Amino acid sequence: MSCRGSPRSNQWDYMSAPSNLRGELGSTRRTVLLSSLLIIVSVLNASSSTVMQAAPVDVHGLKLQARLTRSSYSIGEDLILGLSLQNTQTTPITMVFPSSQRFDFSVLNREGKELYRWSRDKAFLTVISEVTLSPGESIDEELSWKIQDVPPGEYTVTGETAEFFIDGQKQKLASSSESVTINETAVPEFVPGLVAFLSAGVILIALVLNRWRKKLSSQHTMMPVSLSPFNHLTTLDAPRSS
Image (cartoon, rainbow, N blue to C red; front, side):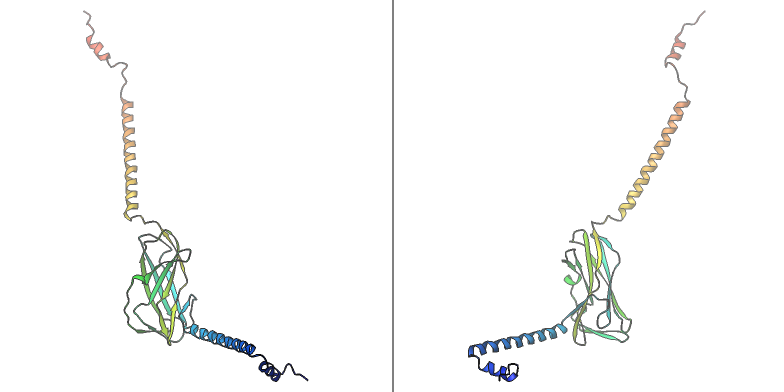
C-alpha cells in the first residue's frame, strides 16, 4: 500500500530520482532561499534610508511648512520663501545636523524638471550640532532667490530640510508644493510715477490751450467789422466842396 501524501513517501521519491533531477531541485531551492534573503535585506535597508515626506506631520511629530510672500513674481525680483520646522509632539525632539545648513528649496517647471536649487551654489560649515525642539517650538528661516535664467511661466516651489538624524536614523522632510507665476522683467518703479506725471502735464497743457482759444474767439467777436479796409482812405482823399 502506498502513502503518496506522507513526508516519507516524498523523501523516498526525491532520493530515488535521477542525480540530474536532484541537482535541479536543489538549485531551485537555493534560488528561492537567496531571493527571500535579498527581499529581507532590502526591507531592512529601506527602513534605515533617508525619509522624504510631504505629509503635514512626519512619524516623529515634526511639521515642515513653506510659505511664499507672493504668488506672482517678475524676472529680476527676489523670490522669498519662509520655512518653519515645528515640533508638534508633547515631548522634546533632538535632531543632529551634520552641517550648518538647516533648509533648502527647489523650483520645478510644469514637466517636473528641477530648474533651481537654493543650496546648489552655497557652501556650509561642516559642524555637527544638536538642535532640541521643545513641544510647540520651531526653527524658522527665510530663503531667497534672485529670479533669473528661467523663462516666464508657471512653477512649483517645494521646501525641504537639510539631512539630519534622529536616534541614528537619517531624515529629510519636504513641504507641500507652492505654485508661483513668473512674469517678464518687471517695470522699474519710477516708470508708473513718470507716466502719471506726464499724463497730468498733457492734460494741464490741453486745458490752458483750450482756455486761450476761447479767449481769442471772444475778442474777435467784440471787434467791429469793416466792409472795406480802404473806406477811411477814400474819405480822407475825397475833394472838399467849396
